[in-house]
Length: 588
Image (cartoon, rainbow, N blue to C red; front, side, top):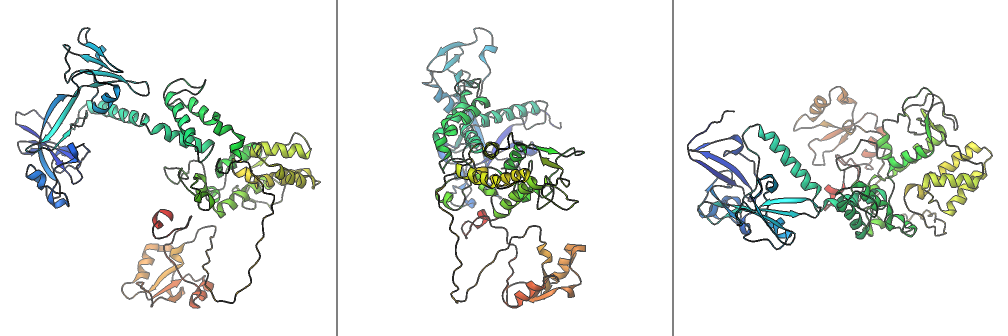
């Protein structure tokens, strides 16, 4: 729409930015043709300049060459505007020595020669390469047929087009493009083809198979797989075959998952005892696995299992509630402590901190004792009646698991199989069996056994546990030295704190910051101003001579006035130690 044919000379120019990226500028008799290709266009794309050299504006910093020694015109905003000319030639004058040469030097696809009339082409074959010749000559129209590493037949045109900057020796290999900048019916079709080509490129990229292999192994077997393990799984993904599993097609997940789960690294009991092997189980998966294993069922008249709204805040995860597109944790995360010192990855450890561990254990304990309710920080929404262990009247669901026998050995073994996949150590089994046998109420004894198992390390990891036989040393309180010292106490409170209503601008000579605060906060601002507990800040570099604390923070106000409390504004939660070099990366 709005375009017409003309016999006026058309010139294709390029803008070259300081980094060597180029943007097309169509020029027809001095007038730009299209908004996507005029002088103001910023649609830059990468090209491969010969020897890495290109025209550069002297104003763009070091390495300027006066826009190719005057071959191009300098632009006011930086970069150069250059005229271009193109020339086409053939790449190969004889059959290439290998398919590798074809892949490395040819980039333009070709139509299938079988679509043409018989006799159009003659065929010459080499080592993994088939050439389709016209008149038995190698020309830019010659088609080469090769098979890639994934068994796909690829057809390439024996053509290269060189773009040369007018009046200079700068040049680059022309970039294939099949999209018109004009609005036409073929645009949607061509865009679909290019998107499909991009998807194919990503799917068949050499890094895709090992990338997927590593992620699947980390989720199912171990956070730190050996290179050989990753290679076997990646090969299964590429070939679509693992032993008798798979269709033989690239990306076959049956073959891939068979390799993940059936390789010796996944089955070896010896590796299960290796502290470098295995992984920490995800909080949400532990919760779901526990409820399924213990046969959670809805109470009458309930149609769905509704969990408390802050469920994710309690345990660190909730289905379909990722913190970012990169999931709940980073695959390459290295925790602090001994695992970090050994350079071990532990992605799930990103979710492990004291409040979340406590939230998970409290929720599971509550589920065992009261069903899914709000009793004692449970996972349920409400509790309308007093909480009493064994009374499920507050619950929306409860555990219905019943052991096959009343024998303590059988019960503990069944629970160990269901909740730890049989990894529970003999020592821990004995402790739990003794605790179970000490109780006369079998229902209460079962609940106790369930609580003890979910408190065991085997429930929270995929490893077996090696006991050293030594009791944990209980530290003794040190004797006071009598030397004065200062301590920084960090209190992590459950719930939300409206910090903007805790520390408020009060008296500010440069501008009325309290009015600005009041205007921004509206009805939730603390007023009147005289109700604030004023603190002096005149000896600081703050814009206000004094600030006001919330009227109910009288104890904190007294601590500040006594010199025992200081305010830190705009401080986030630290989930690992940080210093100046890694503060932005290591703090939230």
